[in-house]
Structure formats: structure tokens, C-alpha cells
Amino acid sequence: MATAVLRNSQMSESEWKARQELAACYRVFAMLGWDEMIYNHITVKVPDEEDAFLINPFGLHFSEVKASNLVKIDIDGNKLDDNPYPVNLAGFVQHSVFHRNLPDAHCIMHTHTTAGMAVSSLEGGLQPVNFYAANFVGQIAYHDFEGVTVRSEEGERLIAHLGDKRAMLLKNHGILVMGRTLPEAFIKHWSLQRACEIQMATLSMGKPLTISPEVVAVHQRDLSKVQIPGGAGRADFDAMVRRVDKIDPSWRE
Image 1 (cartoon, rainbow, N blue to C red):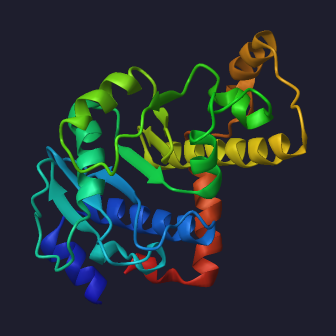
Image 2 (cartoon, rainbow, N blue to C red; image 1 turned 90 degrees about the vertical axis):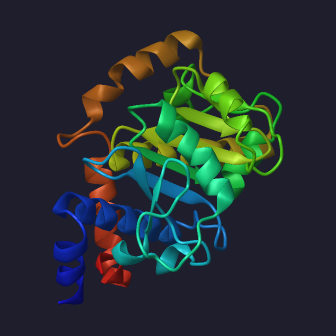
């Protein structure tokens, strides 16, 4: 009942749906071990609103995020609701620059996974040595580490280094991906995370086999042939949400 009152009296149905999907995503990340204490961020634009997006409440673990406790802020970091939780400045500064400048960046994900940070700290970064890495050859950007992302002037360099890419390894820092939908960003993060995990394992054993540019081109050309209907990442994300529901469905609240 409380959930229905919140949805109907304080926000549009489209915002409530966006909140639930984002809250579910935080729980999925926690389930998959992609959380980092109370840090890191996943943000989504609020549907039908100009320059407003949702971000996790600073101080809560990903496993504690619910639809109702997500914080709604504007592009300048001002809270647009009476949420009592603060917003992590690093999350706002990094994500707002992309939401502000990239119309197609509906959802942005940034993590400090062990594999993501390890590969981003490696000379040469991601290498074409496994199936998932082949997805990203020529599709990934890099940005030099400048310290914790709390200075707005770094935003110009982040945008410049991203260019026309929508996945980035922040050197010595971690993974950053974005998508036109949350499921699209999710499957991009999942695939990049897997590529990093497998690269770590492969390099620990010796000299890897490198995939040729010709095979990479064929691989990327044919990827769309194995995508099921519903949009990029939709079926994958929904499957993970069903797993989360078996653990704790309170993200819906």
C-alpha cells in the first residue's frame, strides 16, 4: 500500500518504473559481487523530465537500494525530492557530465570490480584474447587517472576521451559503460567484466593467443545474429532480476 501511495501521489508511473528497474539493477550488481562497500554508481535519466536523473543514496550498500530510496537530482547535483540521503560527489560529477552532453546516455554504470580495475591498470588495457574481449575491439575508450573524480573540469577530458565510444576503461580505476537503456548498459558491463576476468586468468598462465583483426571483424558483424528479441540485454537482465527476487524482492518497494 505504501508503495502505491508513493507512486501515485509523488511521481509519474514512468518514473516509478524507472526507479524499480534501477533498484533491481543495484541488487543484481550486489548478487554478482560487483558492489564496492557503499561506493560506485548506476544512474538513469528520469523519463519525460529534462536534466533529471536517479542515483543511489550515499551510505547504503547496493543490496539495500529500493525504488523509493533512490535520490532524484538535477544535472547540477541539486536534490529534487525530500530524500534524506546525501549523494556521493564523485558519482554526481562523473555521471552528470555524460548525462548532460550525451543524449543517448540514458543509463551509466561505473564499478571498481577487481577484474575491471586490474585490466584498466595494465599497459595496453583490454587485449583481443577472448570471446568477450573481441566484442570491444575498436569500441572502447581510455581515460588517464586524475585522482578521485570530484573536479568538474575533468569532465571535458572525459567527454573528449570517450568520443563516439560508449564503453571506457578509466585507467587505474575501473569500468565505465553507458547505454540507451538500462538493460543495454547492463549487458555491456557484464560482457566487459567477463572479458576482464578471462584476460586476468589467461595472462596468469602465460602468453595468450591473440585473435586476428579479421576474425574480430567477423565476430562483431555476426553478434546481432545471436541476440533474442526484446532489445539488447533485456532477456539477460530480466533473468538476473528473477534470481534476485528469489533472494529478496524488497527492491520493488
